[in-house]
Image (cartoon, rainbow, N blue to C red):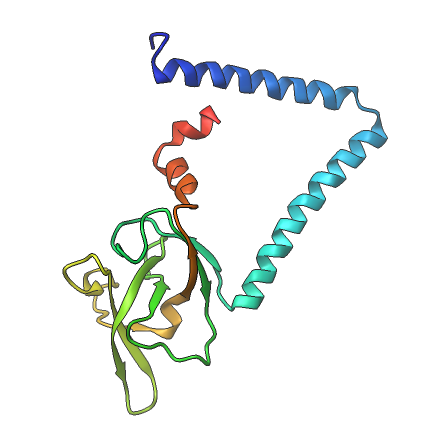
Length: 184
């Protein structure tokens, strides 16, 4: 790649990153055992604190994934690609038409953020519902697993309660452009 192109700068940053990592390992080798122990302990405390905060959010919100990033433009103008959503999922609170839910479809890894457009309540009290993206022409039946026409409460990851615009773009960029991770 010629100098002046983006690939060259990325390679330079990659080389600088490797040099910085080597400096870090050199610093670690020069530490005495007590200093090294404290560095490892400090890192472990940071990681465990992050995990405790995440698990705490799961308990408080009732959602297996209390924070998600909008990955497509299917909910525009309500939410844009890269918006960060905060979810709750309390089972005693009924789902209503017009609410924005995040759901998982069997066989797909990525949750979907769409609006509930129809509710169907059976005589036994079971509630099923149909979703659709605000920016989509048709409902989501084509996204559900084969033979499934309605979603159930068990499919819901959570309901949107708040959002931060475009904060999740970093996640999208890192997934869409893997070379970007190397440049950082």
